[in-house]
Image (cartoon, rainbow, N blue to C red; front, top):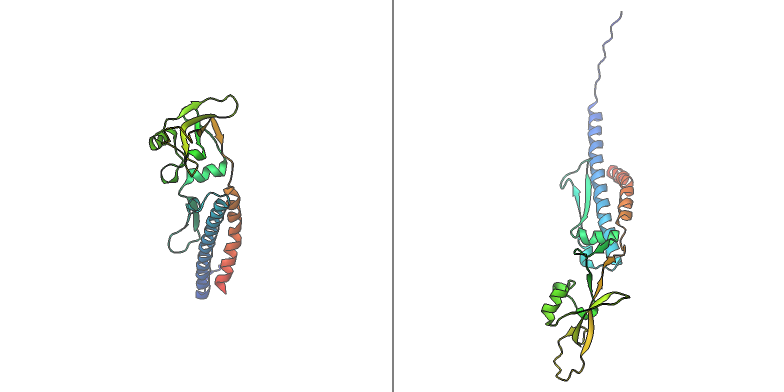
Length: 212
């Protein structure tokens, strides 16, 4: 039986080419994830502003590429909101019920706004306006919390200083409802799926650009 000895000689140029290809792949994957993450952040922010939810909520959308420094074939992008409860509510359109099983108080224009522009509560409204709220039951439509006062130039109910009662009105301050169905104003999954579908093409494009 004839013996045969095999020997594999690896060309240094091939080793260098393989290393260069791996490095090109790392750059391509990392760049693709960075582009996809940035694109998704921009798409979500645009959705929020187009829905009329304000620039402040839109700016709560952030993104981060991993690894934070360097490049990797396992690169990933994370896109999230710093106000997940608010964004999530507009994304899903949930049914909101009162925690204690009674009513949800929805402020009218006459109620004005709370501190820092937040929605005001009945208790806060009474403390700030110095007026008492009165419950008015209605068989059809939402019941009301009303107050006796006058409407200022902003249409908000305030204490009446008139001794004759001139200008005094009974103003609806809050609508009382058992539950509220928020409309679905966002579709974040749609943009997330588009971003995910774009990743393979971005990797190829960045890989090719890296060779040129």
